[in-house]
Image 1 (spheres, rainbow, N blue to C red):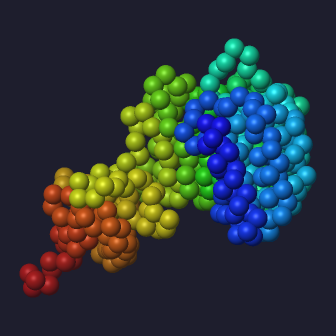
Image 2 (image 1 turned 30 degrees about the horizontal axis):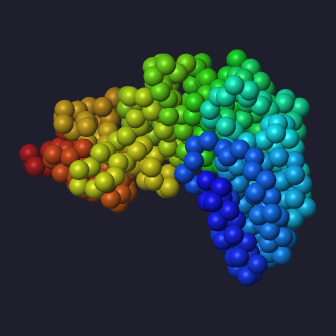
Image 3 (image 1 turned 135 degrees about the vertical axis):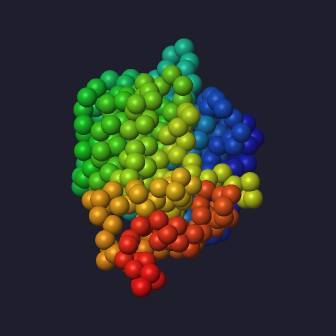
Length: 400
């Protein structure tokens, strides 16, 4: 692992000195689950890397992972990284103390006001003497990230192990005026204890596009509040829970989450769901609509980047399902107030035709079109509806 770390430093030093800034400077062993212990043999190579960073031009994406970072290493790196970094990630490193590591991260963010991405992944294992992040340092890091308006991507994974502490400080990221677009808060054992800051934040429709909440302590009450918030959110594209058996969130919570993006009770209910957020719930509650044997791909609910297409796919699916029971017209007439007037039919056909035509543009839907698939051809849907609309006016001329 030492040889691998040295090799990575040498490669990037050479590239930085040539003036050709690499897309990403990733220092540390690639295939190692446990951070390396302190080795003085690496100090000269840290100095060489710092010198190369100091001479480099352009923005740098720096990732340091699975290495021991003590005060001497941080003192070498800190002055040479000023106004150099666009992205900075510390992944699974070992520190003399975690507070020292947090202070290093804070100073680096403050010294790089144009930074757009910051990541911190704590050690995901437990040793005999774990180094806990202090609450004051945690609060200061969160405040520092929020004060840098250029940072749009934040990862704080396994940041705090205590469920009581983690939410009280991480909720500082949940502000309506937040500038964050991608937020990873996985493995924090985060429990809200009844606080509604997270769902209130989502309901405010912030710029957030991706939220990762894997392996936290969110329960059914949290799920219901988040589901209501999602129904008013138009920007969030991915919400990841990836629940496992034994998590606090049980079936009612998972059902509430799925209900925010899927409700086949009526066409109106389906139309009024969220059509922009792909929700990855996990544990027997997949939001998977199609699994095609013709392509190695699944179509998840709200998978498209186009909101109207996501909505159209859902409507097309429900209309196709109803045709198999011959009840499309009956359902639609009931949903329109029980009146099957002739003047309503053109508008109904036009709307359904638009939904089905847009849905069929999706490759995975097109692959399943037909009598044996989950989706029927648009013309089949329209013809069945006309045939069963049961309007006497449609047959009067023929009788005459």
